[in-house]
Image (cartoon, rainbow, N blue to C red; front, side, top):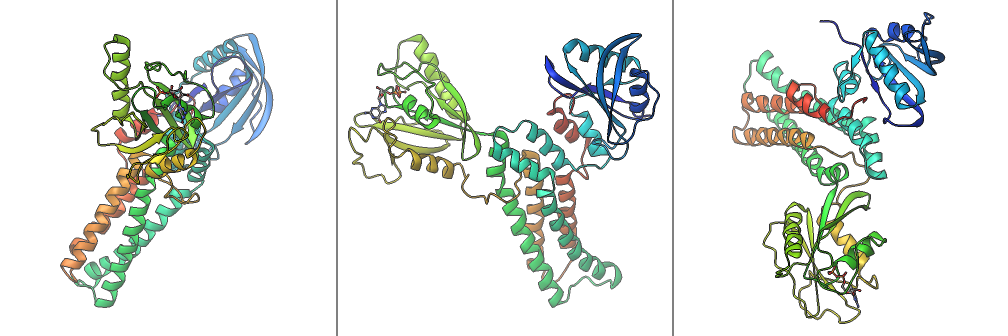
Length: 439
Ligand code: GDP
């Protein structure tokens, strides 16, 4: 089956100085020549000014840049048409390109082709979608690092090391037809497996930070009316968003605000004060508060002098915060309680540090490549499991190597799952469906 040539707008639809329409596939060059009614050849990575025609009418003058296969984003012939950013120009141009033999690209189809053509692995493809959707500079930096190698380089080292010990084992099994390893080799194999297990586990642990960078975290502020939830959220945000009032129950609904804490995209949810209420609107607000609490990564439970803490029996990370120390210092015994004054700002820096710590966001070294998707984490957990089993088998059966060798093979297969070398179409569909059209 021949590969279709695909087209779509790579820039957002609307009115702008320029818009980019991208064509990729075996007919990209021919279609671009017909679109511009100009049969001159295209040179690799060279921009040319050409006209765009729809049937016989001139539609626009645009910059056509060709990237010849295999040195293009997708690995196929690609032509990028940078025309004026007008929706009618773009629509007419795309319609004309379709008439000339292309079809509209599906979401993520360019990157999927880049993956299929070996231009990037699945981790790099995932990093591209996360880079486009990144909500903080730190997230941008990490994804860029992963596209450029990052976690891929680390995983390559892991795989090479496992292949080298598998070679020892297979040599014994196939060539010398021995089922035992000599003590010296066994010691070496065990050490390598142990080291790699440590690496795999520490890579899994980077997901706390990496997952937070890509998916963001949610922190809910919970407490009785008037304990200072809105004041605290506003203090953290440094902007006034919630209505601050000393009338209980003003924040009747939950208010979510996106910010970054230590570079991590964070949604701060100011919940409605939790108390018994007969008021229907307040009751609805309180119901929503509980919904937010359930989906939060961390709950900050506020109380102050004379107002007790709301007891939530959810299995979620919690921080107990005593507010209004400017009025009455905290005299309780619980050392885990963070005393603050939301109005004066006293104690807020250490509270924010606590929040980061409790979300596991202080652990990672900033330069360390991170695992940033659930798919990557689950593949890396499988690598870890196979290596734990290998170590156990090597310990149990002393020198026998048939079964541990099989587990090392499993670990290598799971590494291939991680990078997408062996991946089912379902997984690929899932990964690429998260892309926007045009990428
Ligand atoms: P919420 O109902 O829990 O969201 O409470 P608010 O943030 O609306 O605060 C209720 C009242 O307490 C307001 O008058 C705030 O100015 C006041 N308040 C909040 N935090 C502090 C604080 O640290 N010290 C003092 N003195 N007043 C505070």
